[in-house]
Image (tube, rainbow, N blue to C red):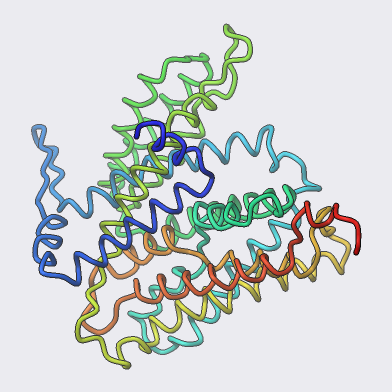
Length: 396
């Protein structure tokens, strides 16, 4: 039994499968006699109080504002490593995915705004369809086996990295409440301490984590979304050690956190945010401009934006089509970019925070758009990518 579990966890598609199961469990609970218990679980008040410091939130917000900090911390570690010695360090390799990411964020946002123009509340959700969930995308690619060229995976991972950078910027700029100057000052002081630790080449994780927790509290109280603390903390983790050749604190942390995030934090987030009650949903509810704008943004906006911007970049000579990738394969990859699930749900929770769940539910648009994009992208790549074994067989 243990050996079977270990074999499953080694699968590249395993994290995507676990995410699907978590979301399915939430849907089942939200639409069964267990629904009241599901709501009670997420509404459990959790309070941490030390003197005058008081953090009192329901469990759902501890997951979204607390656990997801670790997810963003891992994203920050990956961004730093890629920028210094990975795919993002070579300008020749990043131009095409950068253009795809720009188009894949701009066009879905525009489509959403066009569908919801004139409604100030609805327009808060413009960024929801701009996200790509790389965990799901890589899981779908894994189902295609060895027919997927490594260049296509590199393209999608690089695009997702730029997509994450854009999502981080959007959260910081557009989903920030009123600013507390004293809290911002404390966060700035924490960053100075982290800089000193980095410059002195402190390799022990403990001081970084302790200062990082203090910075998270400061940013939480500042009005800026607290998950940004994870990204900021990651930028100060040393990549290389002066005293231990070949040892990388950053890579070590990234390796240690990957399983926890993929099989723990993200499924918990999916379970907490995917419980959409379907009873009594009418056609008007499904076709509400918010739901429709998200679904169209993910399905139409992503494929048009990613493919069009890549096509323009290649035709203008700014980039070239990677080896082993045809135009049809690039289009299939653009379709997969519409799987926004995790990050789209997260941005949706920031945009609306249950403000109008009686009129619409943005999660329906996220799940429907992501599902259609995942299926269409898989079918397109299944048709266009040839099996290497078939390519080696002589013609009959």
